[in-house]
Length: 529
Image 1: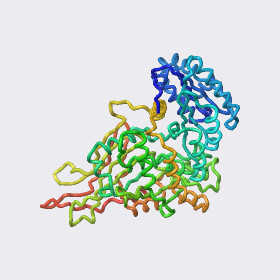
Image 2: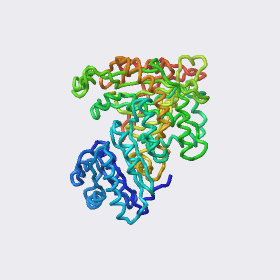
Image 3: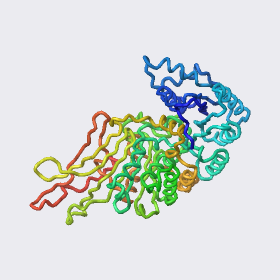
Image 4: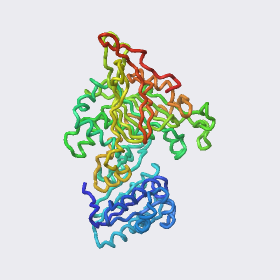
C-alpha cells in the first residue's frame, strides 16, 4: 500500500461521514486538529464533513472546540487556519445524487493544487444501519481515479455472521482489501504493540507462553460507569457485541498468536486469523451473563432497567463472562476467560496471564498455590508488570507479593494518543493494527451461536449490585476452569503514587527453612468479588 507522504503537497481529501455525531466531534476532529497543529498531516489535506444535518464551519467548530487541546496563547491563529481546510457537505446516506455533490466538492478543492493525482480517505463514523448504502455509493461515485482510496469502518461490524457476510461481500466488491481499514482502537495502545516485543524478543516469555507453563488467561474489560451514553445502541447490541467481538478478541489474538514468519503486514494478519480459526465455538455452558441492579448501600446508583432511557423489561446483559478454548499445540487445555461489565467496582482493562503453581515444599504443595502472573494493563493507565513473590524484609524467611513494573506512560518517550496514531497509520497505508474482513468473519463464527441462543431464548441475566465486581457465579466458573483469585488481586493504584498492598501469605520457618503456610491461600469472599 502506497503511503501518503506528509511532506509533499499532494491533494488529500479526508471525509468524515457522520460528522454531526459524538464520535466525530469528540474524537476524530480533535485528532485531526492535533495532527495539523504538529505538522503531521500532508500539506495538501482538505477535510470534508458529510451528514444529513446541515453544518456550517463557523458553528461546527464551536461544538468541537471543547474537546480539542488548545493552548490559548499559541494555538488561536493556527486553529483558525485549520478550519479554513474544513468544508461541510450535506447529504442523505442513501441518495446517490448527494454523493455526486460530495465528489464535486472534493474535485473543486483538489484542482486548486493543479494536480490530477489526489488521495481520498473516507471515515465512516456512522451507525451500522447506514453502512450498506454508504459503502455502495462511495465505491461507485467517490473513489479517487488516480490516487489512493481508503475506507475506515468503526465497530460494531454487524450483529452476527448472517448480517456480517452480506456486508463483507459488499465491502470487498466496492473496495480492495488493501483499501479497507476496520478500526480497533485497542490495537493502537502502546501496551498492545509492546506485547510483540515482549513475546517475540525476550526468551523468558517467548518460551513460557504456552500450555506447559500457563494455567489460564483472564482478559478483563470493566467500566464503573452505568449505561448512559449510546443507551439505545447498547440495549440493542449488549456487552458481548459491544466489546468482546472486537476489542477483547483482538487482545486474545495478540497474546495467543504465533510469531509471524516475516515482518510483513499480511503475515501478521494471517497469524491473527489462524488463532481465530483455532478457537472452539463455545456453548451456553461456557457463558455467564448478568445485569446490574440498584446498589443496596447507595440508592442513587440505580439498576439498568430503572433508567428512564432503558425499557423496563430489558434482558440485555451488562456483564458477561465467556470461557474460550484454543485447539492448538501451544494452547490446548488453557482457558481464555473473557470478562466484561458495566457499572462495576472500577474501570480497568487488562490481560492477566496466570502461570501454573510452583510447588515450594513437597510435603505442603497441596496447600500452597503460588502463581506468578504477567499483567498487561491498558486502562486506567498503561503498564506491564509481573506479579511474583520475594522475601519480606526481616529476620524470618517470609514471602510477600511484589511486582516488577514498567509504567509505559512514565517513560521518556511521549506516546501519541491512539486516534492520532491510527489516522497516521491510515495515511501511511499501515494495516498491521487494523482488522481484515476475514478476521471479523471468524470472530462472528465463534460468537454467533451463543448470541443467537441469547436472542431467541432470552435468558434472565444474573443480577449484581451497581458498583460490585459482577455475579458471584461468574467467578466460581472461572475458578472451576483453572483461574485462581486472591484477595490481593485488586491492588490499589494511583497514577501519581503507585502503591501495592502486599501481605505476607507464606512463612519460611524451621531449621531446614521448609515452606509452611501460615494460613490457607486467601480466597475471595462474596463481598470482595
